[in-house]
Amino acid sequence: MKTKFLFFFLACVSLNTFAQDEITVEKYTAHNKGKFFVSWGGNRDSYSKSDVTFSGKDYNFRVDNMAAHDKPKGWHVDYVNPVNMTIPQTNLQLGYFITDHYSVAIGVDHMKYVMTQNQTANVSGYIDGPVHTGNYDNTPVNFTDETFLTYEHTDGLNYINTEIARHDDISKLFRLPNIDKVQINLTEGIGGGVLYPKTNTKLLGKDRHDDFHISGYGLSAKAGINFTFFKHFYLQGELKGGYIDMHDIKTTRSNDDKASQHFFFLQRIITVGGIFKV
Image (cartoon, rainbow, N blue to C red; front, top):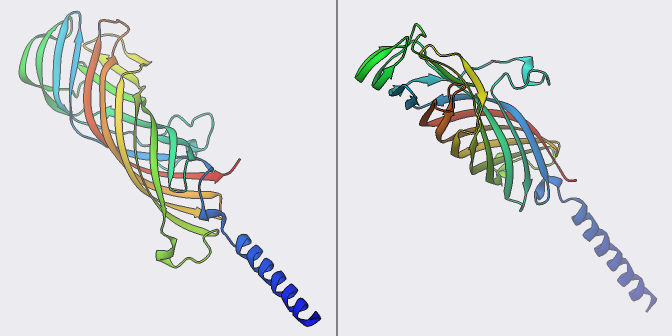
């Protein structure tokens, strides 16, 4: 009888120990729900050509198929210098996992948009001003000398957005047994938000204008790959594309003067970040 009782006792202890071991071996990275994350990084940008309309008291004209480019800083200490962090093209995001696979986030994509100065584009409309005057009907205009127009969103083309994203652990495809040391995830998301650019413009001989203004909205989608190291740190690469519609761009100090445009964009993004529970 005593032997049976001892055997039963030892079996219970063994089962309890085994159960505790099963609990303790579960990896931190196995579940995401309830975790916060923050990331910071940089981007390179490409833009589709855009028809830009400029209107004011004594002019109303459209520049067809305006070409534009970004303004990269390159590999530079300003990305981590608190004083100059807004000079490069940057991405900031704060997020929270609502489930193991889905997160919600808010972010600022600080892009830069610069009209290509050395270009000739067709202009349609009328201008009655001291520097340029006349009627234009698909008239080719060369912008190289900068007397007609300089135009950029360089501090910057700020896309303030919210985003929902899905995350999937694909570590097993690479036979990584200990996902708390290195984990590989795929992520896809969609988002939307407002454009808050600081537009730097010289228009038809008027004084240069450079000011922040809520100018429109944007929609976006992304796909990326995430490498998480030692539970809490990650490196992420993304492709993010979308549509921007800015219908109320400030071009001078006068409320009569404004511009409008819409175009597609593509970002190539690299960020570093941290993921943690509070």
